[in-house]
Image (cartoon, rainbow, N blue to C red):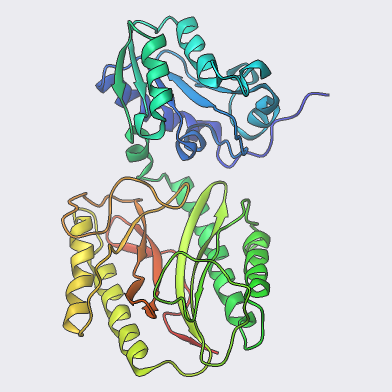
Length: 388
């Protein structure tokens, strides 16, 4: 019996709306066909969340309503099941292209472009998401095409969310909040870090308010003496009296992420940590008060930097980034000098982690949405140091 279509995160009309925007950008660049290889962009245009390891791509033709999803043949059922696409638009290539030193899945993509009759037209590629070898393959096999670099073309379009996407991100925010509150329940002296991480992951997967997580989240658990660095996971150790724990994670639902960071101490925090916390929270509030359409990413960042500096501290890293499908959208940056204009339904992770010395750091963050008049903070965990 053929596999059925799975539950879709969004209605068909939402995906077609996104494709209309992409095709308008293609027309502006005089591109007839766009080859999308970025995993988040593929998810954005199709709804796919299948973990495909072999080479694959979405091919958007400016003349066709739906794109084609070209995958390894064994991934066709999953691709059909998880996307909004009609069955004929999930195209499988043969196993002989797997482990073949001369040909691979991108040869199937190029063959499809020839079948469309676009081999001598404008062809857009996401060069930033292709290896040099793959880029050369497209150029060699499409010698008459006008190859156009369309890296981040889709990324910039998906930076402004639809109301349907915002609804999903609110659901994810509730999951992120639940995970952090579970952390406050399980982090205790003598508890293994791995066991605490397992409890947090379990909460993020079980979800909140009847909405489960749909993907495995990453957990960053930087405990003493690793509080001066941001990107390590749990250790094989146990929590101890006097330990500090910096946590960063986020729920995941239908590919969307909402980040949250908080600092924990087992016992009273040091005076230095408490003063830094007070300065960071004041800076966070100053940054949020700056958010409104027409302001820039630089405006938001500098509101934070000014407040932090006035209270005796510095931060030499950026203040955050757009977030949505996947964790970091590779477009704007909440940083001094980024003049990207804020627009309603842009979403950002206001990430104020501050790693001052190798043995001293602190984290706090919120995920927010730009509204028509200001800001909506999606996460809602208390802005405090959790003293356990």
